[in-house]
Image 1 (cartoon, one colour):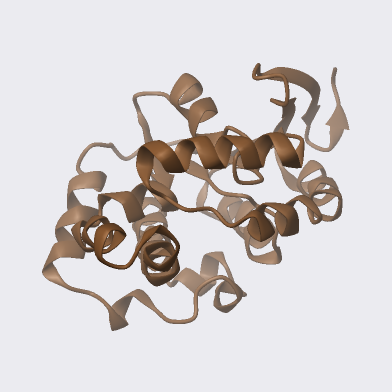
Image 2 (cartoon, rainbow, N blue to C red):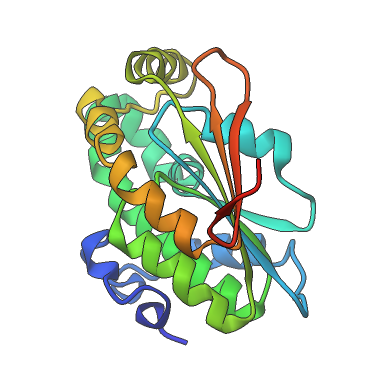
Length: 222
C-alpha cells in the first residue's frame, strides 16, 4: 500500500517521501513503535484534532487505550536525538523549523505501516486540511471504524499553553501557526461530521474537557 492510496494529496503536508531520508535510526524507531501493537480484525482509527495548544496531547493521555498505536508528530520530533541536540545549538525556533518536516515524514510512514498491519490507531493532529479529510474517508476502505475527537479552544488560551509547554519541553510553537489553524476549523469540521462514523466535539478553554456535541454517521446524537 502506498501512502497516496490513503492520502492522495499527501504532497500538501510533506514535501518529500520517507524513502529520501530512510536510515537505520528511523527504521529502528518505526519498528519499536509498531512492535508494541497487534493486528486487529476490526481495527479502529481515532483522530484527535484541534489547534496547537488546545490540549490534544493531554486529551490523548487521558483517553488513549493500551491497544492503540499513538501517533504524534510532535512526539516523534521530540524522540529524535538530533532535534534535542539542535535545541541547544540552534535555539528552539530554528530547531523546530529544521525538524518539523522530517518528523512529519516519519510519522506518515508510521501511519502507512500501521494501516497495513491493521493496528488500532490514534492520530494527534490539527486535522484542518484536505489530506486529513481524505485520510478519514479512505481509511475506511481498509476495514477501519473511524472516530474523531475535535478539541476547540480559545486562541489566546492555546497560545498561553504553548508558551508554558515550551518552557518544559523546549518545543517552540509559533503564534502564527496557532492562529492560522484556528481560522480553518469552521471550514473542515463540517466535513468530518459528514464522513466520520463517530465524532465528539470538546472545548478545553476552561482547562476541562467539556463535551459540546456528539455525532454518529453524520447525525447529531446529543
